Image (tube, rainbow, N blue to C red):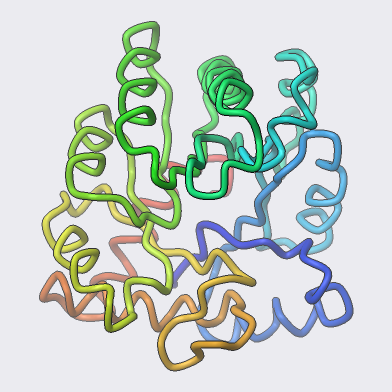
Length: 257
């Protein structure tokens, strides 16, 4: 089995052929998919998709791009949205200083709110971090001092220092199709250096299709290519990386087991 720890099945392009997309993932050997919430107040959409398929689960949260429009979301509202057997994670939330589509103070406040929800529920937090390495690491370290919570840095594109600090706090690091790009050598070096029990793979579909599908809409079946490259980077077989990332997935997303 291989898993797709992060995809967006509620993306409009998928709507007309959602059954086919999930079927192709199954044929490729993908055993679990997590479709990601980007707005708490639209969490019903991702839950509906997860309810439709036995092997699809979801998260609930506010993406940093949308932090400005959901500043009034309360902890109780987020906890209520997460109270569903198909919800296996909180988020995605975090900081994005690349696009800066929401005020940074709103992003930070939302990030901390989601951390508290992860702490309260015991569900892991899916973290979006782009061009904000130091602030992400600082918030994680500060909040970890208040009480433990599980988390994953999804679609990892940062430097080795953020990866090191995240793993030191017990976090996971998930690699997308970027790992397969010619320009992905620095990421492959990081992926090779991390503890075996802290690595995951994902598509981030419909974005970032791996190299052989570059320029096309990404979909969960393509996560297998990323897993092959991760195996090569770590010097082990595909079967070994499939087993490893699957074990890591179920350890982190325990409600999906």
